[in-house]
Image 1 (spheres, rainbow, N blue to C red):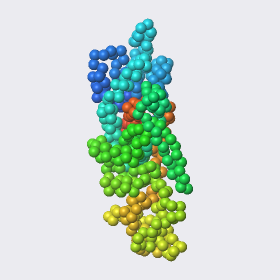
Image 2: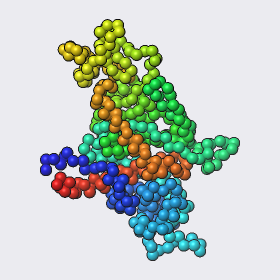
Image 3: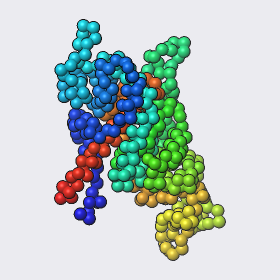
Image 4: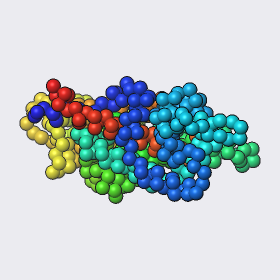
Length: 423
């Protein structure tokens, strides 16, 4: 049994291969939302109870799991899918009446009213999410060690808010415009405009599961919101284990010498962040004062043999005690040269940019791209009718709760059958 620790007990691809009803069953067996139900029942008090809180909550979860873009499309699914109705708690024998018309499923207005009540349960929903993240830390090996960060645009398809032309609910009053700029290696730029919101997400780059998120208008800074998220995680060590995070992987949107320094000195996190090419095209190298050493914007280090002869140096690793990178010459291999990170925090990071380890770690950033793809593809954020920041945040939080709860169910099932896994 010594080789159990070598086996990965969780792979998200297994969840993607499950059917919708099977995912729903796993979710219902593992969701712990009693406090949320209690809060919703307190809000209802002595109001009508044609559709109980638990049933309505089950229906909202199922709408996310089944990937419906609107309440009406989900109601049509409920009308024709008896197994789904039974699983959510809608009894086949009891029909609800509204005037002369039978309602086998709740009317759209009931869904809308329930979602409005859910928006008032921020603390309870966030607590469910945080407890699920805590479960992942406790049950997945190395969870949170390699993290990826990204700012994902969630476009709104409402009309832009204009007081004179459109000031009703057809417009999205809180959405803003923002431009995403891509810096190419040849020095050119590519711009992409968005109107809506931005989800700032930190996820585990190994298991492709969300750890922390924040929803803001589209024009909020990625770098500022990353600082805010790390600060919140640091202040909530009970559920978030920031000490577990060894590497933070991000694209050029997070590139900054000050940020690299802050990540290492305040949080002891290695920044694995791509670099913008902002040097003048004619400036190929920068020389280090009082040393026969130069470096380029890619982080490669060279020994200056003479004016026109720059010899690429061999990277030997990070010197933690001196907070410096160690290099030597390929030709001699005797003398060790140390380059302090403070020489240029933008270029020099604890994992050297020109090392194989940096390239390997940076490739893990694709996991957050896959997570973003699932948000769009499986949970219909690329084609939706969501209006307002509060509702967008609610739907994003519910999406992450669904992901983590189903993952929790698969982990528990694997742990029960660990002997058969070893065999």
